[in-house]
Image (cartoon, rainbow, N blue to C red; front, side, top):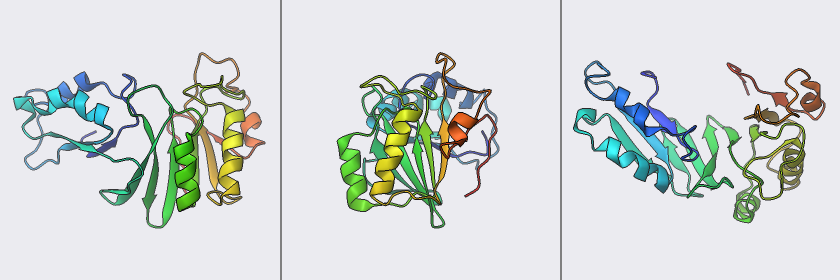
Length: 211
């Protein structure tokens, strides 16, 4: 992680943001070379508030900074342009992201249920084209329960149909399903065809996608 400077946070559940781990980046734990770039955490207001006690630790010595990303507002982060959209995931301000670089655009939807109406309104107005879309598929090959903060393949197919109808995706868009749960019996790790037949790549640890 010494080669990573920017972290884009989706939400504050402990499996996605565990601030206590940042103590390992403080002076006395991490001996960094002079001039080493600090960590920059980008996300919502709840993320900022959870990290304040760690930003203000004297031993951090300017090693940690937080940045609020306003919803629906393209934000420059290093060589990328990042736009946060409100997710459906049960914390104060969860979000998923549109990430752009070098003329290519990624839709990154993890830890979110079906899109909120305000997201659809934004997409219909702006009509970004996604070269790659990665979707939360926690419920595997079935549908999530109504009002869930995750999706399954059935929900994703409906989302893709709507994205195609407004011009945000087409047959050239690379589609990935991601974020599976071991608690769901319909993930089908052994039979990827259930996803591939619908035009999706099933992600795995260490997967690299070029688009």
